[in-house]
Length: 214
Length: 105
Image 1 (tube, chains in turn yellow, red):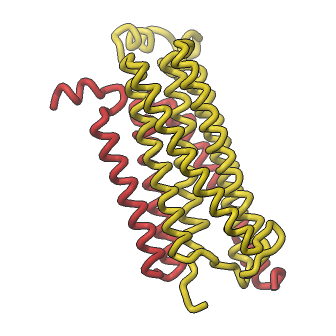
Image 2 (cartoon, each protein chain N blue to C red):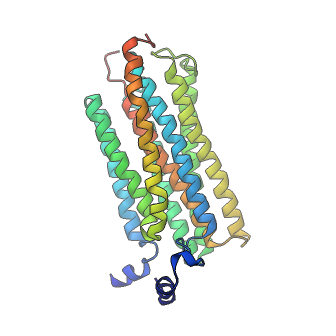
């Protein structure tokens, strides 16, 4: 906190105007945060809906075998977590004025996101192959398919749009059209996508492990 | 050491970020192990939610560097979100009722 800032806060009345509680936080950053909060509530509502239906259902299916489903989804989690780390590196380098390195780390982040998408799409393909739709599945309560495809589908949409978003930011970085803030804000979005998966993965996958026996 | 601390004042320093990443991986492995060892579902749910909350706090505080931003940002965003999410819990008793009348049977 700088000296002038402290002076402003002590000499000006808070009601006099001209004082912002978000000093140092840019508009696009605050905007992104507000979007993230509302999006977090969307995902919360979907996860609550899933928990509600599961709690009311007497035969909720647990179709995921530990191998390969859980191991593959663990690998997907690893991809997302690591892509978050590479995004932190990208923001770090862009804030230190190293555009070339920032650009490379954004590409690495996009790669992590794409690996996640490929693995996830492959899993969807397999589930659909086994006869799972949003209306029915061979294992139990039909609502399982609806909740699973809705939640993971919305999350995949976020990852896909995140990859495109990062591509645009990388392109603008390369063309020197962007500024540090933009990389940081893209990073916020990317970490949020990672954060959502930290709830989707345990609640949808780990809670639905086939405990054997059939 | 002091140089790193000064250098990373605004964004926590990269060393700290690697440590956070390792913790996130460790917690994820712990979650997967819970599934592997087939812990009773209620216990598992509580542990999973607990660990996921820790992970989300780690991501928000360090990766999204909320800890290093102005506190007013945190106070604007987080309490509102938490209260809204808690309000959603109000629906849960109804799911028990639906289960008891056997709507899904």
